[in-house]
Length: 456
Image 1 (cartoon, helix red, strand yellow):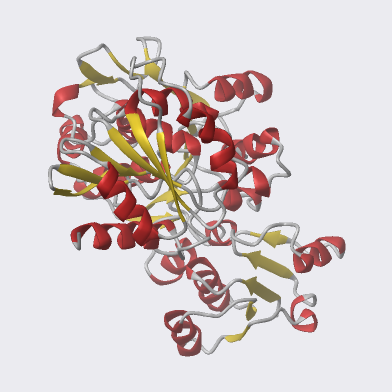
Image 2: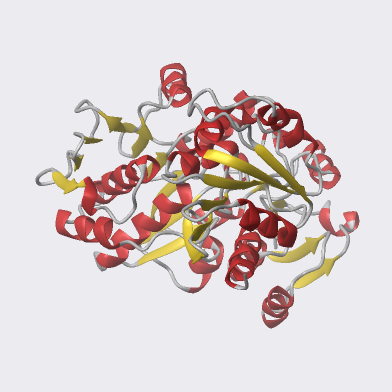
């Protein structure tokens, strides 16, 4: 009996353990942290051995194969030792794919992947397909494969998950964009991060589809360099794309469609340039899967959106509060600011991942009169934005320099933003950073923000 060790006892780790047990492996789970009660119960119910608070090398280094949580870097000491002795280290997604014949629709990108993933899933559900939602959102892919086989899986993939995928092949791969993110995980080398994202095209042939934003310069450069073997489905502006806008309508015309889909932009449920791109990618995937245009149109015009992504919370004393906690990188914040139509108080901060804040400089000058820093370490934010407090905005003609409020907790950040805002303004939480300095996740940050706003 082969021995499989799972490192990390969260959603993906427990799912991998249960599937491995079902497939006849001798399974052991090890987590350096505390295992949540719900996952302990899951492991106990399946009689799977585990440990927490440590990695016992004698119980790990004897594995035939290891499934690693995406949160564990390849530089972790136990991973280094496994690699040195030649033990294969894979992801939960890689393991799960071995035991299913379902079609895999896989989405990655620095921004937009959660919305696009959720929108595709909505389209497939409306079409009546037997579909599961997995990866960064939804339930563990491995657990679904073990317990309730589907015909289709829509999977949001982070670069961390892609790092440890080798034989996996996406039937439809979608790459939304690539901007600097997680550089602290990739030796502060942008190309390493780019290479990770392009692993989504790994093993694809001309029988599979690669959907991508044609106007992303990084994607364009990499396609020319590596020449993916998949059939290409570009989206963007201009009729040379398979999905595009003509200024008034969203038009999608994959070869698999009986006729092109045309939806007025004003009827789309998701507004803004970034959401238009998300809608294009999702619609192309649906047409490739032969979903009828009427179903795609219904989804595009009725989809409710994703929690913590430009989510309206409340209006207090004429001030609108928007929860964009999912903006964990600078480019996500750029899209949020680009959609703002009122004077804005922007709440920034968290765990910096090697961010370059210059990407949002022009929009900060144009849209914001106040920045609120919310983090345990705001030094890099001050270094970049403090000069804005001495120079009037060249874009708006406003002679008042930017105001900066420094805080180290959510309560003070919201109080500061609330008192700095005027009637008709928007307070936007779009942090640019990971949440792990003050919160357990971006969801936790968003929920605490919404609760605090409702208590104002």
